[in-house]
Picture 1 (cartoon, rainbow, N blue to C red):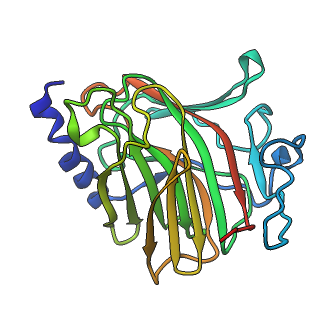
Picture 2 (cartoon, rainbow, N blue to C red):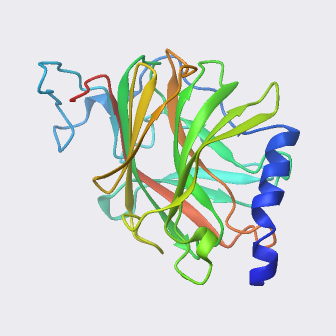
Picture 3 (cartoon, helix red, strand yellow):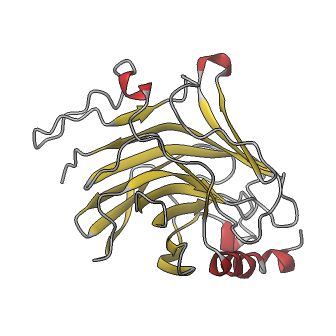
Length: 260
């Protein structure tokens, strides 16, 4: 795709959002999956400075039965990858659904009020103009939510998609889309195919964004959904070449313990 055509993608993506919104490809299980019973690791058990003890939900994707959506349709395929003893969650777009360019998958865990949610994501192949990230503050009926996403294009000449992050709020019923954080450059983002660690801390009507341990923004929004559910999302890397790249997700964690 030429650089001139690549400039059209944000417009095409916005038109897709405005027509329908974000698609949800699978229903969220009503109860936590077995992933909460993993062996103790970096995140488990978690004891905050305030005395809160909450193992929350932590998934390394080593167990294919932990409960994440498994989808294989005309647009996207998801599956657990467990080779070499290192589990991953695979999101592999097939075709472009122009009415809903983001593919959203919710974690198999209960809704929460205040929480920290974090995960590791990376692309295989050329990330192109793909956005990947954390879905948070989503209503339990999945009709409205927020996406904290990043671009990881490895070519700095594509300045619109190189080391950028942002936050979108979407509403499926009204087809509304609001940018709470416009695409912003951060050198904390590792471009290309390396893992990036994304983290959102949500407390009351404020949420804080972090990438790879670097705090980026604190955003006030009196309309945050509570209680809410969380998950991951991506958009195909190129509207013209849908099979260009895939997303890998690892170490997904959400807990109600918040340290200030």
